Amino acid sequence: MLFETVAIGGTFEVIHLGHILLFDTAFRIGKKVIVGITSDSFVKKIYKKHKISKFSDRVKRVENYLRSKGVLERAEFIKLEDPYGPTITDPSIDALVVSEETLKVGLEINKIRFSKGYKHLVIVVVNMVLAKDDLPISTTRILNGFIDDKGFLLQKTI
Image (cartoon, rainbow, N blue to C red; front, side, top):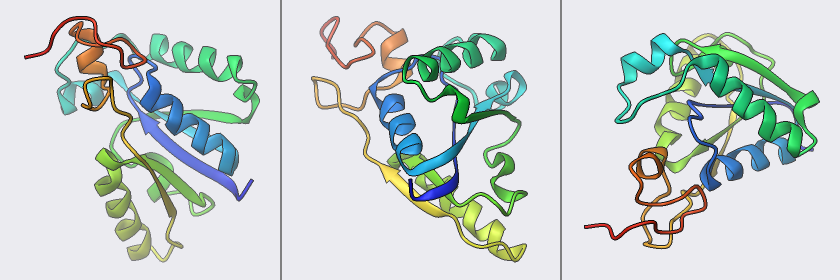
């Protein structure tokens, strides 16, 4: 493990291959992983294109996945009320694992940390995982019935 404390964040309505890559990367490089999960009120502010289950159900979903991988005891769960969570208030965090889609937030976090005199986070970017149609796997596409959580096509896309 390269880092003492790594952070990741998301809504985690569906655990799909993209999320699995995010989790696997974070737990491979970090001794402890802070898993930020968007609160119900924050989900409403960021407007998702699909229905989102309540926070406690999403936490259980992530806990079940991490338990199945044998890493649950290394996770610390926090409720995200904004895009940054503890990454802008906790100087002990060493790294942040993001997708290409959320890299911009990681860069904003480092600007805020710098302004507070904290060390920059090492930002580890994981590639978007593509479905069989070469488009990114996303919760929206899964819930709309276009693909499954592994990226296999369920119906023809237009």
